[in-house]
Image 1: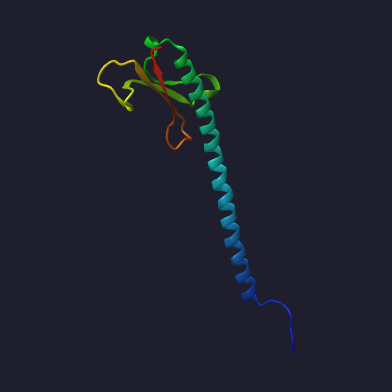
Image 2 (image 1 turned 90 degrees about the horizontal axis):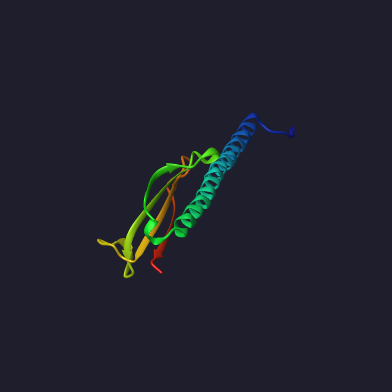
Length: 128
């Protein structure tokens, strides 16, 4: 007697394989969604950093100074910024100089709860 169809074991195994596949697929979509939120926060942070670096570079050399961590206003209140200014020498622009020079390294640090670390932007300003 030739019977066609699936046995109960075959149906259960098929359902198990489909469930594992669906779980993996859903996990990928969920993980991608969270990373997308981080990318949005990072993009906004970089834009804010660009604005703050432009504000600092527009000042005279003598008035560029460090600022403690401060929140932005209104809709951006979850973002904070800090401005770190160090005198540097032209020979070693990444190393703070021990004395006053004609070069300042300005670093803007932007923080947000969704960011893994800190978004930062740096620039060098000189007396001209």
